Amino acid sequence: MSGAAYDRVKIARGGGRPTGRDYIKNIFRGFIELHGDRRCGDDPAIVGGIARLGGSPVTVIAIEKGHTAAERVARNFGAPNPEGYRKALRLMKQAEKFGRPVVCFVDTSGASCTIGAEERGQGQAIAENLMEMSTLCVPIISILIGEGGSGGALALAVADRVWMLQNAVYSVISPEGCASILWKDSSMAAAAADSLKLTAEDAKSLGVIERILPESDIGQKEYYDRIGTLLMRELKELSADPDLVAGRYDRFRRIGRKQVKEKP
Image 1: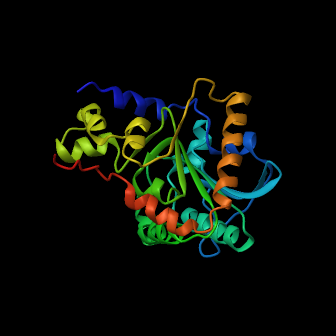
Image 2: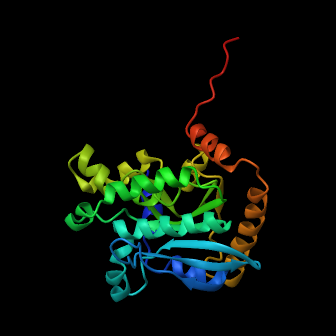
């Protein structure tokens, strides 16, 4: 196998890529961060709050990895705990109450898998997000900006539109984890990456995402301005949809469906 997909994985994990807070700072205005899940505590791996996009209020939520070593440790390397997912859900339900669209930025190798996270209900927190997002009555757009790993990423990606950066990845498991299970050898990660169909092009061909965002000018003002314009245009269109929930249901039912040609 070529290993080209694994090259994308390495780029997606690169320390120089913009993180969720960079997107919030450069696309939105007047961001007010909100904290806590009202049950246990606050999770710095997920940043969320209220902001303005083109003059309109939105709720924005991002998984944050941090840039420096100290920031990454403080953010748990972008591996959210249950309280992070519950905070995100609290903000999404608040957005629904006040009629605000929701924009999510996803970048995680996966949810925290510590004993403490499991004791505090990690699986339930993710499952509740999947269920509640599927019926949320306001527009949701999720953008994968780096790694999109397993349920930890999907918990913020049950959306009306899912976009991926050109070098982002999206899969049910990391290539190393997949290789360790299938071949008992994590050095087979490149072969696993090719088989997982985790690139943006793979995801678009399978109907998992709607749009691939080019990265030629990543981090530049024009880059953020372009994404902001696309978000405003898409949210305006979604806001005019009289039945978002039905459309979201149909979207996920179509994923991976193969077209069967009739016999002559």
